[in-house]
Length: 214
Image 1 (cartoon, rainbow, N blue to C red):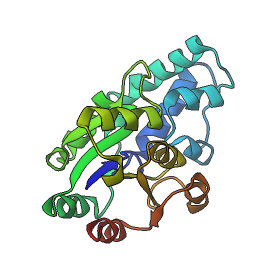
Image 2: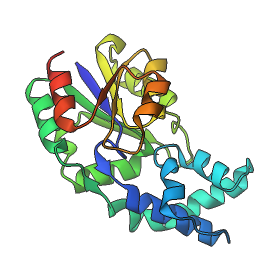
Image 3: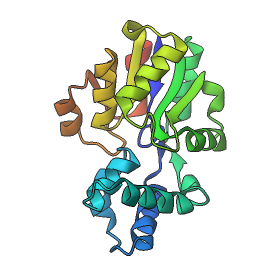
């Protein structure tokens, strides 16, 4: 069995660093910074989509400027305003012990994803870490998951996608994977169910039981 894990909201709680970096970008573009409760919905989607919505624009140059401003802060500080969710290391260790192949599949640029995984000493659990490119390529979860499947020659029938937002579910389903939505991240049960998720888990221990019983 193979399991693909989202990163933000699934393996680590990166909320503080992401939201502070979004507000940094808004400030740099001369826009009003927003309270946390207004920004939480933007945890998970690709940055290009986030800034398109927040700035109410489809101007690629404006969006690119916002993403660049975001990365000014995120690359040096926001990256590490982050922590591993309780129970995740034990979950990953148990899955590896029973012979499950694990990968990271995140919309975050792969250069940042690798830094985060290594910072928290989680790299030993994963056979590969996949993410988007800095220019936005493969930030769409459907495209990213298809890329992982092709590169690793995976069987869709034997692969699961684990994530906390609808993008994870939609991307997994589009590639014929079984999907699990986790409720310790940033998405709601309603969001995951509406997206067509196969299973929902409220805590890492429940996910461990689900996957090891397959």
